[in-house]
Image (cartoon, rainbow over all chains, first blue to last red; front, side):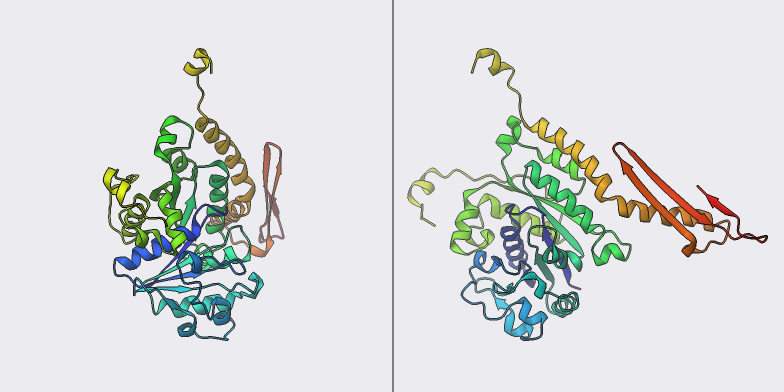
Length: 271
Length: 89
């Protein structure tokens, strides 16, 4: 049975799209079939981060409105065979989404994939609501920063009241993905620590993604960081998180870059 | 930076933590209110229904929050054999 996962945060710019691409690719790298869906209608970016921007013909809105079928709209990743993308529309606005249409698309995808990962837009409006609506579990992307933590708390409240699962009286599983974390600054006392955030939000931890230039390099290249540089610190953190999603128990660490003096001197390539 | 300032350097993370805890305690009370009320209503009704038959239509629940004071008002009509005795609490 397919697992429907929403990647959400409330606040913009914390790494939802980056994390959707990285987790989607990481799960696909373990052999699972994965579709990532961009719900940010009008401001799509998952296609760009995944390097598929020139391959978009049909999108989620076309499928929701019955103008195209899933086979026409799904874009298969060229690097990982079991990874697909369902892009958002860039020209329409979020009002083009309908509750029935989204439900039909999700149900159809359930028959085809192991994981359906919904990349939520920022904010708490229509698009965000549709992205979380059918989820079985939620990954809440949070930066160690007050406004991000506050917005995450608000989103947790909505996940517990506005989703199908909540309306059935069930509890939505919510996992924290802490991004842009800097252990040195946290240790120095100038950044909220992992434990502070866990205590405030009181949800379990899925992973800690360290602040790293590799994330920007990967998006420059249009590749999820787990594919662009699988040995980098953020990629290892995402790969561990993906294995935790599959139920494996993996020790929680903040991966760091291995310093390779000669490798860095001679092996450097501009991204 | 003076020597004294160096030794008494205050870090900013504890302030972030305290501010968030205060703020979220308040915001949870505001935004979480509808759900809390629904839950209270269900649980209160379940307790009463154990002893007497009640008509869910005849139940009114109201909450109010003013500054530091929050009130929950539950108004339930209970049908009795000798006419409509009304219980308010």
